[in-house]
Structure formats: structure tokens, C-alpha cells
Length: 328
Length: 299
Image (cartoon, rainbow over all chains, first blue to last red; front, side, top):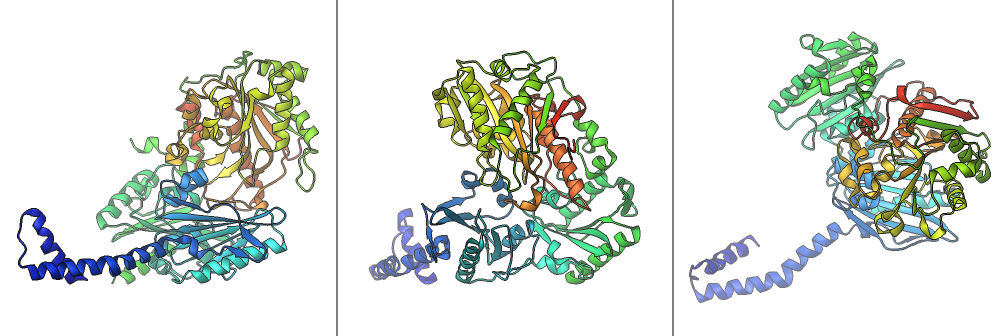
């Protein structure tokens, strides 16, 4: 294939005034072009369609439930046609497109499937963890069910299957359709490598949140109404709870694309949020809890809501050791 | 320099954020209504009735209609509801009743019906009334409206902090997403668009069963909904929303042993006053009148 493309390129130069080397080469190239058009391009297109055709991942029926109305397909530009403001949440990840299929069952029950292509497994994990509250119900990589809603992620996909009227039958259908979709997604997808940087001791795993932007940080821990940590699509961030008896501290880890960006953001954060802690890296804020922060390499680490200076320092040191150890 | 314009968690804990939020720039413009209510421009009536819903959550239409009457008579200081509604709309008005259709949180039909019945009693012809949420710009009643009534339920919103009366006008714009930046900070600007500016006669923030907490873009969880059985009614959309923000905050404090640390900023409510001047967000300047059932009123 590569050879053919090189030959085509050489022949293609005739358009810019260069002469073909010989009629034999020209004939050979023509044959290759025809071969490519007949066999190779259709294969490539089919592969592309298969990759993009989300409808194939969602069943058209399940038991008495039948597809109702037309499917919906929404990209980064049109997602607001489907959900208005909620679309911003997906756009703060690498979301690519959403496929929606509705089902009905006589007399008037409804069930909806929303299948989100989140661009990569990390962001599928991120959007799932954004709202995670319950226990895994065993579908996809991780899942939860609450009040008629089943949410799971697998591969680069985040999936919501829901019914507004929850009963035994509709709940059963929600689970059945979810399982079919999960089975149709062949790639498992890896959780973000950053998760391994979280110290394990006292970590509440279900509290782990992965995100990029400050609006998401505020959703989990309101820090400021402005982006004082210079978060953006190029940054990766984790926040998680650590429990020690009745106290829940937050540990935030941010990875920047460059060391310089991390240092700049750290200076800004210290200036705005904890100027009195510039030297010590730790302050007791007005609600009595302790905040500690440090920068190492391309990372910023911060601890919030620690019950004591000891605990804040301990968590910060553990995270720093993890990160620097992983960096070696 | 930068620090002065940024509100951090520490500002909120100190209580200094309220002061910053309450700066009045004198830009306020009262919505035009027939009767001059400028003597009490930020009056909000909270009406509650323990019979507004049954245990299963079914709305009681007659009770809700009476609640609405009680709210407007208190708001305008006119005893007779029929006379009161004549102060709100005219028989020759073309009226759009802006509602909300969110599937698990629509404006209750009982509220829509109560409003429609009263405005028709005033004399507005049925063909000059439209009740809807979506497709406003394709509806001749809404595009040609001389009067608007805004009625929607209160809930937390993952992007704008709350879904309230201010945000409900986003569908007057052909590209709602244009208003999403910075946690929907500038939603107040919607109210200055010609299609709706100065036309709103009444705002009804439905707090019959508000949602006070949620996480994730599609958050909906029955455990975070409670039967408050109330309506917040005012000519000022900002004041009802500011009280809505406070109500949800209070409920979270009561509900959670340890209130959630996160949450989307509700800055659009504050900025609706300080930046866009369409109403009053400063609770100290709002005249809240509470009538009816007072159990666990919270605000």
C-alpha cells in the first residue's frame, strides 16, 4: 500500500509539469490505482463506517420492547439540540458523538438508550466517575444503577439506559439492553494511568473523579469561581477522598503538559488561594480545615479539608512520593 | 489585582463573598407591567399548602390554583383574585406562558391550567395564548407576544447551578449554547433581548417538589427531591431565583450530615443583578412575604 502511494505520488507529479518516467510505470501505476479503488478504498471506508456506526452497538429490540421513532445522532456541534446545557459537561471531555435510541412497550412505557463516544477510554472513565455514587452492578468496566437509570462505561463509550417509570419489568429491560450493548463493545479500555498515582491507604475508590477543566473541579470541590489552577483540556486531573475515622480529606493531583505550566499554575494558585502558605505549603483556612499544596515536575498536588496539619502533610507527602517514584 | 475579582472557597467561608455578590450598580430595570409595582419591586411571595400534593406526589389542581391566587393577591395587595389578574394582563394581550418540559421536572399542568384559567377570565382569547417551552421562535404567539408569564420548577443544574426563572428564557435564543460560557454567567442578558425584554408580567418559580442536589449531567434521584409544596411568585425573576438558591442551600444543610463540598456556581443569579440589572439578587433587598403552611419553611 505504501509503495503504491509512492508511485502514485510520482505519477501525480505530471500535474505539476514533471514527465512520467516510462509508459510501463504509468500502466503499472494505473493498475494499482484501479486496484486500490476497487478493493482497498471500500475496505477503508467500511472500516470507518463500522467504527462510526454506533447504532450497531445498540439492539433494535429486547423482549417486548421495540424501537420507537428515529434514532438521534449528535456531534460536538449539535449536542445542545439534544440536551442544552448538559452538553457542556460532555464537551469538557473528548466527547465525539452521541447516539440515542428510544424503545416503547405497550401500552405506553418508554425506555431510552444514550451511547456516548467519549473519544478515548480515559474520558469515558472520567464522565462516568463524574456522577458515580453507587455500587457496581457488573456491566461494562464499571457501572451503577439508580432510580431507573443504569450507567456504565466500557472502551471509549459511556452509556446510559433509563426508564422514567421504574418497575420490575422496565428495570429488567434496562439491565438486559445494557448487557447487550456492553457485550457489543469489544474493547475494554484502560482507566487513566494517573489513577495509579493515588496513594492506596485510606483511599475511597468510589470517590475517584477524573477530569480536565476547572468547572468539573468545582463540581467535586468548589475552589474558586475562576480557573485559578489553569486547568484545561490539556491537563489531566484526579480528585479523591481519603477517610481517616470520621474525617474525609480531598487529594487533588493535576498533570500539566509541561513543567513550566505546572510551576506557573502553582504560583498563581498560591498567590490567590493561600498566599500565607507560600513558604510552608500549608495553611489552616477559615473553616478550620487544613490545605496543603506542592508542585513536583509537571504535577501539582493539593490536599483540602484535612482535619489537621499532620494529616494534610501526610497525604501530600504520600502523593508526592508516589508521583516522584513513578517518574523515576 | 486578579485576586480581587475572584471569589474563592475561602471568601465564601469568611462570608466576604456575599458582600461582593451584593454590589448594586444601579442598573436595575423593573419589568414593565401594567400596574406600577416599583414601590416594592423586589417583593416575592412564598405560598405553601400542605394539601398541594398527596403522598404519591400527585398535584392537587384546585389547591394549587388557590395558592396562585393567594400569591398574586398578596403580591399586588388586591383582595379579589379576578381584579388582581386584571392588573397583570389585559384582554388584548398576546400572551406566552413560558414553561419547562424537562421529562422528570416539567412545569405541572395544574400550574399551567391555573394561569390559563385566570388570564382567560380577564378576557384574553384562547387563540392569543400559547403555553410552551421549546420552539418559541417558531411560535407566532411568543414572537409577537405583548406579555409573558414565566413558570417553571426549581432544581439544581449541573452547569448553571440552578434551573430557575432566569435560565428558563434561554429558549428565546436560537443558539442556547451561546449562553453556556462560564457556568452560564450571563443568562441575565437573555432578558434584554427584544423578543422578551420588558414583557414579563409574572414569574412563578414552582417549588412544589424541588430537587436540591445531584451529581452528573443527568442527575435525577428521588432521594434529593422533597415535597416543599410551595410557589415563589414575583415580578422579579432574579429575586425568586436568589431565594431558590438559598432554599436549596438550606435544604442541603438539613439533609446532609456533611454538606457536599462541590457544586456548580450559581453566579448567573448574582450577575443578573450586578452585570445585567434585570432584578435583585441581594437577599437583604428582597421583601419576602410568606403565607400558608410554615412547617420546615427553611427561608
